[in-house]
Length: 210
Image 1: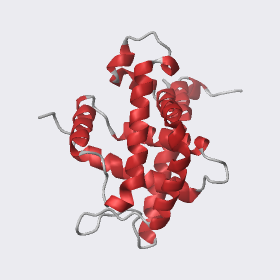
Image 2: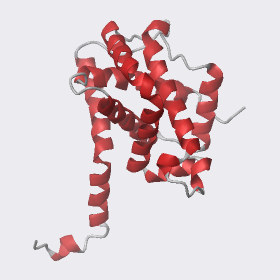
Image 3: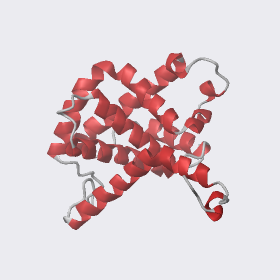
């Protein structure tokens, strides 16, 4: 394909295009999140805005979708947790450097026992917090765990982009785990909102360890 001299000489243009193509799923996720927020704002309702007393509003419909899907996934949480983290590392390979047990390991990711344990723990914690969100009116992760998560995320410089990658990987894992006729925009939005609430709780604790 013919190109002009100016276009072909543009520094880093191919690398930029490759990077955009590689990360477009995450960009799509971020844009979808923005679309959801704008649509709800225009409709005069927030999907999970905090009331004056700080209680999270999570609708009965959202709760039902999360509970129904989590009931199907729970028995395979070890496998799904691992798939969840493999998706994260597929999108953002550098994220592996945030885990001490992966930095100098020659063990393939899918066979790393420490990763399997950690991945299942995070996946279960995320899903259980989502399942309890409406009943409890807040994220039901123990305060000590939230503080530890916040301090760890702060230590390793976790930013919004990392949370977006993780959110996208979570939704894709859930989508693939459920029957095709169960996955819907409503299901996606329910899990997305529950995840966003967990992220918000973690961000509040992102400070140096005491």
